[in-house]
Amino acid sequence: MNEKIRVGRISYLNVLPIYYPLEAEIMGHNFEFFYGPPAHLNKMMSEGLLDISSTSSIEYLRHCDQYQLLPDLAIGSRGPVQSVLLLSRCPVEELSGKKILVSAQTHTSAALLRLLLTEYIPVDPFYETGSATSVLNTGERPNAILAIGDEALNLRKHEDYPYRMDLGEAWRQWTGLPFIFGVWIIQKESARNNPQGMREAVRKMIEAKKWGQKHIDRMSELTAEKSLLTPEETDSYYEGLVYDLGPEEIKGLKTFGKYLVKCGQLNSLPELDFFSP
Image (cartoon, rainbow, N blue to C red; front, side, top):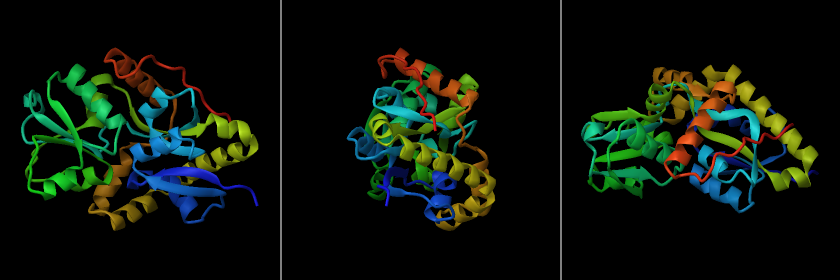
């Protein structure tokens, strides 16, 4: 039997269309899945514990020497993303000098928030890392919270946070481009050691994505069953998501990288290096 391909799987509902056909064994595969938030999978990839993973886009930009991008596979938005939200007790323009609690699960969204609050809506808050849900459960109410993933979907109507900024929509208003929160990457070492196995694995990932996109209504139904969202809300959610990495999405990713360089969060903008299946 062929050695299993170690695949990192972000444990959020928004990537269900890509992984469901594999996890439900609608498609045969040779994958062993490892689950976790983006920051955890970033660490596993950096330590060589995974062959392929969905990961923060900033992780690739910072460590492109170690990875290659999978072609035409991403998670992002062309407008409101709904699951990456700044929730605030006051208007965003009034956050200077106030604390923003930032989810520890994200790298890309945290970097995007700093860009937006430096370049787009210039304010000067200070940031603290932590779990929004855990802090709120203690009764504490930070001035603002950056929530991502399923937590953001569940907290977006919190009565104590009447002001909301959707980071995907803010980016689109600022740049006119899609924002790519996550990409899929492959270890260069894995590709060298097992080129045929990795080519087959990458083709299978792309095939699974196309299946999920074709059956997006079913993905929406499954999400409604597993979350606090209504069927109508899940339909709206998936309508706003991007799973392709085409020319406009690549332009958005490069623009993000350019701003990261400008603000000192990235040393230089790398050439995007794609794995060829």
